[in-house]
Length: 286
Image 1 (cartoon, rainbow, N blue to C red):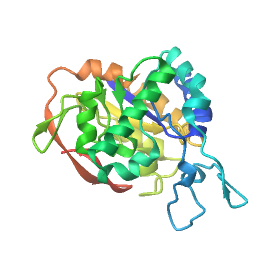
Image 2: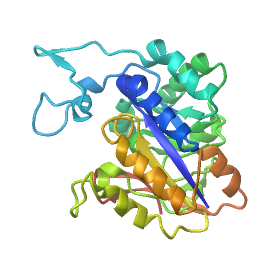
Image 3: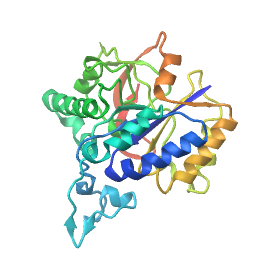
Image 4: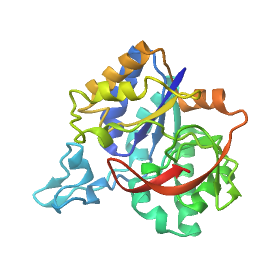
């Protein structure tokens, strides 16, 4: 039985620090994974959330971005981290395309022109860094619109992982068939569990292992983040790797997973829906 690891890499620090830690951890445990990388300017320091206007997304990850009240310049990930990301590819890990964090807030209400420009720009940056076009796509925060789904087929992706659900499928939107298969995230993420129902860093791995104990015929997809599981939550991720191997899982990339499940996929509608532990809505398998 396979369990595919879907790694989102959204920030400059996540790329420089979290990615090498995750590489080393995966090598040590004989695991594969797909790294979905964002290659534009890291503007996460400008994303404010919560009640305090001085708390940014990076500070949420334990990173200071304000210096005497002044916002630091946004580093460009492709310019500063290309060598790190090429090493990921050269060590045999799959690398896929992933838009920046602005996408997560805006794509649901944006038009076709904006969506196309965002996806084409990310594909161009990926091609510049890796010397070839990306063949896999994962949307930040599982946020998509109809035009973005259409572009997953028009831009030549073999598969995408833009949704949450229970098993791989061919997506439809208002009865329009999108030929690019979806490999949805099937398990809850750590940040959706921690702080709810008594789950803490000390016991969340055991809870997640219970959830993955009896998989469907198509196994599971688990999403982690270079900024979290590649940082302060790295010990929890190692507990999961050990536990999944003990349960008999083969820990694979999404491409390896897709190769096993791609025959005769069913069709399912994609729609916006809520998930426990996550604010707002995400694209889910209906």
